[in-house]
Image (cartoon, rainbow over all chains, first blue to last red; front, top):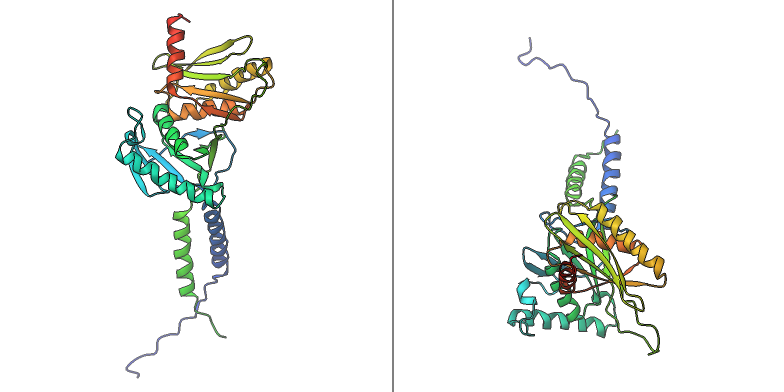
Length: 159
Length: 163
């Protein structure tokens, strides 16, 4: 009698992984394509609810300016300022506003030298409840700094 | 029969799949362009006075807005209509329809007009601005933004005149 009885050999079961590999490959190609297509789009934080629009214009790749909670984030020059800094009092900007204005001018000048229009367009992102006064003040500042076109970013709605 | 060990490959595929799934955004964005400011190219000083059509949107109270389309020229005039307000997270479809309607009425009178100036009161929100722009752009693509002070002046004029 054997001390260690032989175990009955189990049949080797092979799981057919071909369908799952097929699905995985298709999903990966789909997501890579979706990622590449959305790479040109603007970055909108989850807490910012942009307005909805029936417009069918595509979003252009352009520098982004975001106005949220009275703060203006200028990603082009990596600065965030209060909206009050961009409004002139007695025809003058305060120190922070002047600094941002000069930085933006420098940025725009660099594009003028290269003779490109890309840098003269800006994507404007803000929440749907932002008042027109704030929007106008920021747009007015951007135009005075030298930006030619301001693109209002909105979410497409079918209605 | 040689069997390939694809465990590592499957692990990598799963990781990439979840990474891409989390990073992708399905929200479709659009943009509404504000054209660059330009100088007038009027060369004939005896030409008819320009119409310079302006569109104003201001609130009458918390519940309603007034949309006014006015023009100058030889025969100045205006169209206006009041509309109910909706919450800022909803699209005011009636505002889009009304904007298109009033701009169409202006174009029926003056079909050659190619641009309008738009002024909104300071308390009008971004969603309402986009909705008005959507309505106008159905007929006229070039919109120039004007200061909120113009709209306030128009609102004062209408209230003073009891209109």
